[in-house]
Each structure stands twice: as structure tokens, then as C-alpha cells.
Image 1 (cartoon, rainbow, N blue to C red):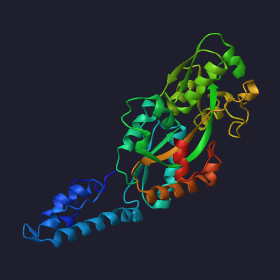
Image 2: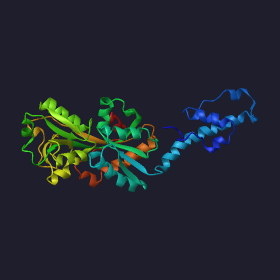
Image 3: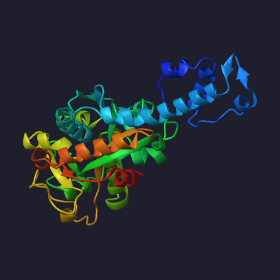
Image 4: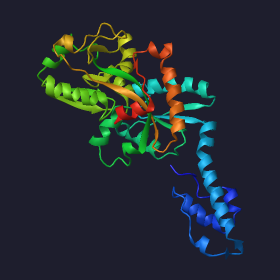
Length: 344
């Protein structure tokens, strides 16, 4: 987020003598301001009047050329994809799919680090404060936009991040333990007693969608049990510790296919080929109930445009590949500018 990550200026500037510390201070404040006192005095510290001005021009050239040079050589070190939720969720699935391919395409190691907690805010805060050089990237979901207005005192703002790409969208699914007597979604919500449901965390897309459906559409009482990610919520559902789970579809598909969970409803306009036997909410008598989550990649706000553009092209290309298209995630493709607009 600053021209130099350390407090020291390049050695070339220091060679200009007494002007270097002073000039460096001004340059680090993002604008080069000429000190007119150097023009008024023919000499200072034994230096001819033209020499400070020459050093200033040299410094300006160095700063102007530093960022493009960094961009051309990007990446220069390991890239870390910080996933805002625990392993196994939709953000994690996409991050690992992209990470492996991105490493091959860029020729540098890409590691995936799960930093779940606080509805995705822990990872977002970490990346927002990282060096804006494209080596620390946030992988998160709709929760980033939700938390911007729903959560205070996060320690960061969405303005501290910039979108690289919004790459996927997945509908929400409501699933229960196989032992649950409800045959379908209608039977499940007819139970007059309140029930519990798990999600990947407060403020996540499935949480917001579930609250809207239960309270405004179905008019039933439900107790939300937040987890640090989709995988812990699935584990709670499989263990029958909650009455239901509402999560992004890819998170639940493996458990459904293994018979560990049973899908009751998909918050989508049409059925999904990954779980063809699961009806939509509309088929169960609740039309126009659509909810889901996008998955996006974000960098610190002052990451150079060229780095963001390069990552956008590479990540979108990966999501067009057959492996991604065959997953339960519907790949989407946006330029960095469109991704920024959608994320807000």
C-alpha cells in the first residue's frame, strides 16, 4: 500500500547526500513536492544547487518505474490464498481448484490457507492489511458484502480490498439427517416446534437466505447455529447435532451422495445435475425463493492494476476448464471492474 514496504529508500537516492532522507520522506507520502528553498540558495552543505534537483528527478524516475518493473516480474514469491472459511466449504473448494492450476500457470507455488471465523472477517482483515503486491489473496463469498453493513468494528472496510474476479455461483440447499421423518421440505417446516439449523457462519449467504425463507416465507421459528465453515456444519448435520443444515450446494454434495445427508430443497429456479433428485423450493410450493453465494478473489486495495488484470485472466481461464465446469459450481466470468461492481 506504500511505494516501499520498509522505511528505507533505495541506495541510489541515499547516494545523493543530505537531500536523500528529506526527499525520501516526501516521496513516501505519495506526491513529489519540490522544496523551493533549494532554488533560492546557490549552495547547501557544499552541494551545487543543481544537484538536489537532479537527485529529485532521479528519485521521481525510480518511483515511476518501480511499480511496472514489479508487475512485469510478478509473481516473485509464494502466493497465499487465504480462504475465509474452514476447509470443505464452497470457498475452499474453489480456492483449491484454482490454486493448483494457478501454480502451474504462473510457475510459482500457491498455497491455500484456511482462516475461518467471524463470518469470514478474520481472513478479510488479514488480507486487507497485507502488502499490496498480489502475493496475499482473499477467497471469500457473499459474506464480504453482507458483513460490510451487518457487522461493525471489523477492523477493516470493504474499501480496503479490490476485486480480482467473481468466478462462481452456487445455490443454497437445505439438507437433513437421513433419520429425519420429513419426506420433503413441506413436511419438515410443518413441525410446530422450533428447530435448529447449521450454516457456515453468521452473515454468510446461506444464513441470510435461510433466515429470509424461514421467517418471511415459511413463517416458522428456527434457531441458527453458526459454524466456522461449511465442513463443520456438514459434520454437525451428519452427526444429527442440528435438525438441518443450509449451505452452498458443493459443500453438501459429497455427504448426500454417500447417504449421510438427505437434500430436501434447493433454492434455485431449476434442479441441479449434481443432485438431480433434490426438488427446488418452487416445486415444494415456495416459488421465487432463490438464494446462493458467489465466490470471489480479492487483493489489498492498492494492488497494481496490471497484477489484478493478470490474475483475473488466469483465474477466469482456470474456471473455464472442464474440471471446473463439471463441478456443482456454476462458473461465472467477470472482468476485474465488473467483479468490483458485483462485490459491492
